[in-house]
Length: 89
Image (cartoon, rainbow, N blue to C red; front, side, top):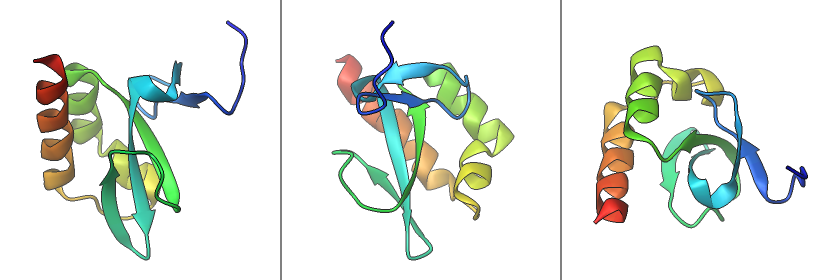
């Protein structure tokens, strides 16, 4: 795989590189956490693979809280799971 940082990001759970469109982005802006569906909000971002078991592992390990350096509500994880189920249809 040719690595081009413009197109690839690291999943905070699996620690593997994926194309940006294979990941969900969660962003912290002014101490507020958002699910960045279009991956265009400016701010500190964290990426999670579009995989149910990875999202559940992130929730269990509080991976987003660690990556974004603040508490992340479980509602963000629910948004990710809902987005995943919509994509799978």
